[in-house]
Length: 298
Image (cartoon, rainbow, N blue to C red; front, side):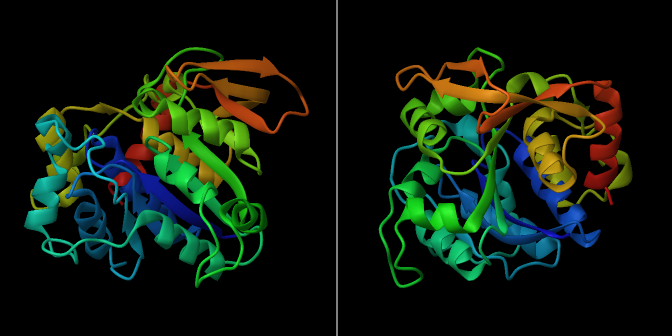
């Protein structure tokens, strides 16, 4: 069964978002997923253009794009534009000079156009767009409010966030209120790929050798970490799990997660019947890295 994916990403603060997009397109070409839409969850002016440029490069310039329209969130640090500005200005896309649509509007349109229970949302950044989706009201795409629309259309939320079973991680820390809200209120199952999953999985070393120097994936990694260097694979694991499930690399620990709305720190309560689960590694990180590197360079 082909899985319908809506990707929400903070593309910019780390290059593994570009790796995740590349993996997602490879999985689509293999017939394992169908990319229905992408949204960007920071205020950076370069996020939507970067996503659209990547999608066009991979032959999917039709993918709907949306972006956070609230100003001032993770857009003031030049370190957050090491590659997304270069990709936006250096490759064809719709958003070099004009603004992208609002992320929640895009999410609602994508969900409304899907069948009931058909869509998986993969969130690989702070959860502000996901929170805003839950709080949205009915519109021209659906009379349902956000909670009703998600309940009807989304089978699962897969979130790269948290540090399990308990700890702190950047995506949750950057907007603790949204992380706490989404984890507490989300009406369908959530699976977390935590910090500890992607940290030991290093990918990207083969990009310089296997891809031309004009390839945007290679450029993004070289601009961010340097030529021939690797990066942790937090976001890539969430995408891989969305397509292929936990076997053979991980097992699922079921229970209930909570997030502190002030600090973003997460905690965990084991419950075999809980609506949440997190990935637990059961194989060598190098085995996962090999699969991801092969997908990135297809």
